[in-house]
Amino acid sequence: GIIGISHYHYDHTGQAAAFPGATLMIGKGDFDALSATPPGFGADPTALKHWIGGPGKSVPVSGDKDVFGDGSVTIIDTPGHTPGHHALLVKLGSGRTFLLSGDQAHFRENYDSDGVPTFNTNRADTLASFARFKGLAANTNATVIIQHDPRDIAKLPAFPAAAE
Image (cartoon, rainbow, N blue to C red; front, top):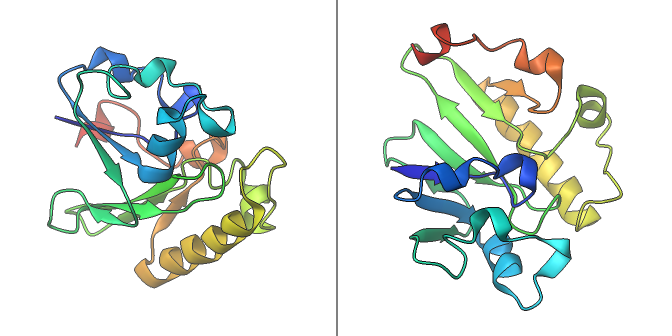
């Protein structure tokens, strides 16, 4: 199996250790920050220690990556929040397309105004990633899901309907 994370912050990595046999897909910038001594940008490798310096298999992803080779799930390079931050483009068999923000934006207002949190690692990269993310959303007619905004999470079906 595969575990893909948007970035190295604890609220996006916390359950990874429950899947030690999975391959970790992580942005190369984040992998490098976690692998540094000491870790860069205040990164804490604890939740991912099985893959960062441990026996687990990891795939540091540079740029975009079509996860399954069929265009259904694509990791989108959106650095700025962290050096290796990624968003996720998901194309469902039903024809619907979703673009998951990770922490590219935390709330709809932050997204709409291109607001850059002071704790992001690179302001210029964040702004460029906003432009790219919004362009991709428009070009694919994707439903944008800001993953920390409860209003956006409410747009998604809950389990068990979500499994379909």
